[in-house]
Amino acid sequence: MRRPHWAALGVLLFSLAVWNGIFDLLVSRGERDYFWAEARHAAGQGPPVVLHDMMAEAIAYARIVSTWWAGVTLAAGLLLIWYVRRTTGRGRR
Image 1 (cartoon, helix red, strand yellow):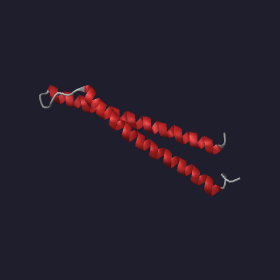
Image 2 (tube, one colour):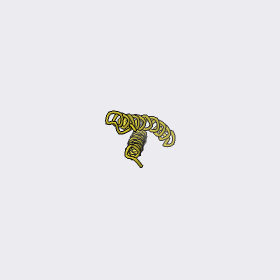
Image 3 (tube, one colour):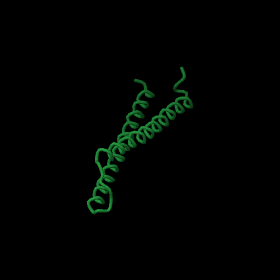
Image 4 (cartoon, rainbow, N blue to C red):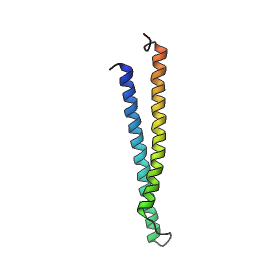
């Protein structure tokens, strides 16, 4: 494999790591929100909550946000590879 291919593979792997990290962060935030809502309900200060409903909403939101950020990361990385190849003349034959 040539160097630009390795760089593109690195950018792709980094974008996957970004997706996974943001998704995990947002799902864990949804779990924390569920536990707070459950504690409020147990204290008589809030309505009853359903785990499935709250987590389904958190997961749907996490999918959208993490996919957006991974796409931005991937696009920026591939644009950087393209720019470097174009300005250094390495992409020309």
